[in-house]
Each structure stands twice: as C-alpha cells, then as structure tokens.
Amino acid sequence: MRVVAGIAMLLLLFVRGFVLWFLIPFSVVAWLLVHSWAQKARLRQAICWYDMNLFVLLMLVPFRPALRYATGGKVRFGRISEMRVLETYRIGLTQLN
Image 1 (cartoon, helix red, strand yellow):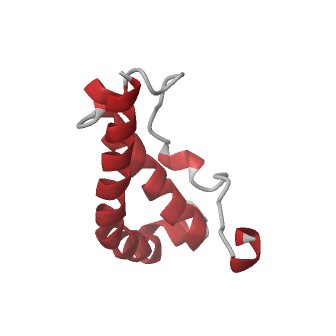
Image 2 (cartoon, helix red, strand yellow; image 1 turned 60 degrees about the vertical axis):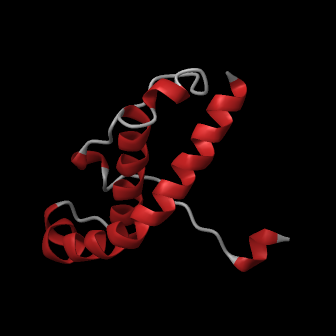
C-alpha cells in the first residue's frame, strides 16, 4: 500500500502543478474583485487559500482511495473567513542552500 500511496502522491503533485497554471490567475482576479476589500486579505493569503483548498479537493475527491493510508489526520477545506489569518509560505533563493 505504501507504493500505491507514493505513486498517488506523485500524481497528485503533477495534477496540482498543472491546475495551478489556471488557479493563480483566477485567484489574482478574485482577490482584485472581492477578497481585497471584503476579507481585507493580502494577495499572498488569497493565493495560499485557493492553493490549500485545491489540494484538499484533490485529496478528498479523485485521490481519496489511494491516499487513505498516507494521511494521518483528517483534512478539511479552509473557510473563507480564515483567509485573512492564513499563514503564508514563501520560498526564496536563499532558502535553497
């Protein structure tokens, strides 16, 4: 089962990488139209919120049978009210050393 879970995680990352090409421009437009004034969220928080919910959606719907042994706890969607307090992540060139 570990091999199946490993292959499923690799497929999940490939699918997520492909979908991010569409999700990031969508999240920027959504931030401009809604989230910047309604939730008072920063652009980085909006992108991270959409990315987090995409990852949870992929884990719960198409990859659920293969990943049920890989996840230790429950995963859940982030509420839109949690967008403003979401901890963002950043990868820089200095962190790759």
